[in-house]
Image (cartoon, one colour):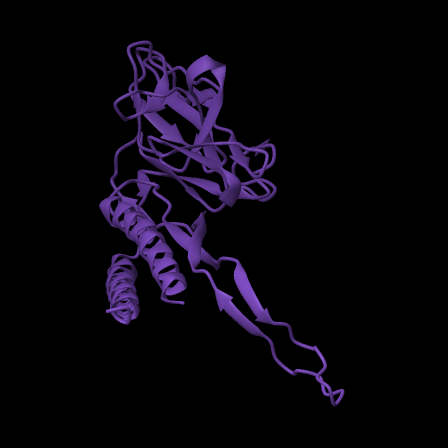
Length: 265
């Protein structure tokens, strides 16, 4: 019946609209530091079974194939891509990036911890290392820079050093620790370039940069967004064309139903 075609095409329009939203968000964040792109995954819906494969006729012959009519499509989920973005040299002493696996840890509301790949840092009024955004989330473990510090440097292992008047050698004032997850795609996105753990991601595994499986810290650089603008624009065009085809399917189903209705006249 044309009514099934209407339902299937309508589900296609809804799913493709969601995909366009995902692609548009990726393109909007093409210049967001440490941003990780997402893709929309599709799955087909239930099927109407009109003939079952393997049934026998009067001669004992088996039907080799079945007859199924699908009821459309839905978005099964959005999947994060954690491929590393390209490094951008900034030469700012508080800009750092992770070369390899791992997330920076920051404190959010209720004493909870969130995770990010963005390493654009600054100091708050108390001299603490915080994210350079509109909230200023503190890096965890907390690192405080002395007020008389003249220079701040980061080692590849995450140690933080400062130069102070009267001290011939840089002094260590803290250690950046990283976190990793068995399934980072299962992390929850909460905005501000932050993720929080879920039961799907598993518990965080913490450690020191440049040790075990964790990446090293690069100073004076930031990780760019991993959005491939060319690929996303192509996906946008493909999605638009698929949207148009589903619109045509709705028009065809509507014309079929109109023809059936006119048979009574």
